[in-house]
Amino acid sequence: MLGLKLSTDPRWVNIVESNIEEILTDHAWCEQKAATNAITIITQNSDHQDLVTDLLGIAKEEIEHFNQVHELIKARGLKLGRERKDDYVNDLVKFLKKDGSRQQSFLDRLLFSAMIEARSCERFKVLSQNIQDKELAKFYHDLMVSEAGHYTTFLGYARKYCGELDIEKRWQEWINYEDSIIRNYGKKETVHG
Image (cartoon, rainbow, N blue to C red; front, side, top):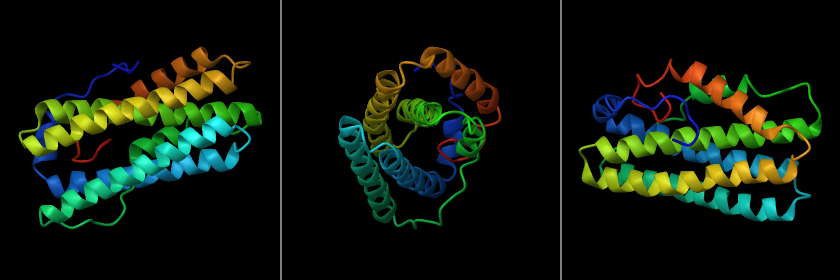
């Protein structure tokens, strides 16, 4: 379960199915934000050539996912609504260390990113296994695989470049924090809602 403590209740999919336009719009903007996040990490850590290369790949993939979701929206005669605020991500931002070293900030940004990818992966799995729409079930299965790769990339770079810090302890703190906030979610037709 990607280290996550709490699985999403499959009944969340019933909420999602009540408003497909909303989940697709929210999902599209999540992909855009994920691309922006990868670019931000690159900008702040351009001295790591391998990280730059891999995160450029992730940014491109996230933009391609944004495009795929947008194409689904258009094909279904729906509209891409305005960007949505992501309360889950905003709650995670509150846990980022803001008073540590540059290295601690780098580690936290990578773990923050890994956490979002882990939860997105878990949500996509729940969607792929429970949604009645076969096209969306396959779509979310394919994205689940992609998100799992992103999750391992972020964790891998945390371990590679932040080894002097207690990465596993901090990752466990992130897992515990995420567990404390995720209980407030799973009630809306959004990816993290």
